[in-house]
Amino acid sequence: MSFFELKNGMKLYYEDTGSGQPVILMHGWTSSHDIYSEPAGILKDKARCIIYDHRGHGGSKEANQEPVTMETLASDLNELIEGLGLSDVTLVGWSMGAGVAMNYVRQYGCGALKQIVLCDMTPKQINDSEWKLGLYQGRYTASDMEQDAGKDFLHLYQEFAVGAIPKLRKIPGFLLRPKLKERLMNCDESVLKSLSKSMKAQDNRDVIGKITVPLTYFYAVPGSLFSPDLAQWYRSQAKVPFNAVAFPDSTHMLISEHPGQFAEKLGKLL
Image (cartoon, rainbow, N blue to C red; front, side):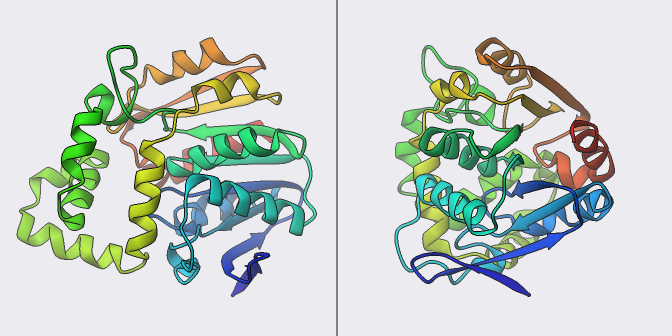
């Protein structure tokens, strides 16, 4: 097992495999580096794949001794890039990981990057009268966020999981909840709550126009959490070469649903 020690002494679990141009792949909320294990194995002869667990997740569960926000995770990413001496990085972020990539660009620019791949994520989760490309395909509003503040965390996570993977609706709650509890055991609940709040407060729409390296957007069709229409929005905002790649018959879990296809599509960009 390998750990990267941050300046504050906390440690992030990471795996560094393969050789060639560096690719950093960042997971989503309540997930872990494991979601990239198969794609990284496929790509190891073509690229140096670095996968790691964000604070409070997986092997980095114990990195939880201070408030954690999206800006914190972007700072961690910057430390990782600098600490490993990386340059010309292909930065891949899925779900919350894409939000980390956007925050990284806001704070540190694109000087260390070769290109960015955002996977199925909106720059602004809260929908309003002018923005309908946020969470739950345009249905989640500030009013919903206020109501969520009083709900049990497991209940909130169940709503999120069912939103991401609609087929879970068919599983009775008394059978689904134990599985979700087991999943949450791999994370620190306080970090999850802090990051959920931070993500919902984000508005990174202006960041897309500040990206100075080629940008690709991987998205699910028909999708689940987010609308496929986000692809066209990103295209309209990008001021750099842009490519949109659809994953048919996919939900938000497009990487775990189609790991081989994900590796193939990413490999073509390298």
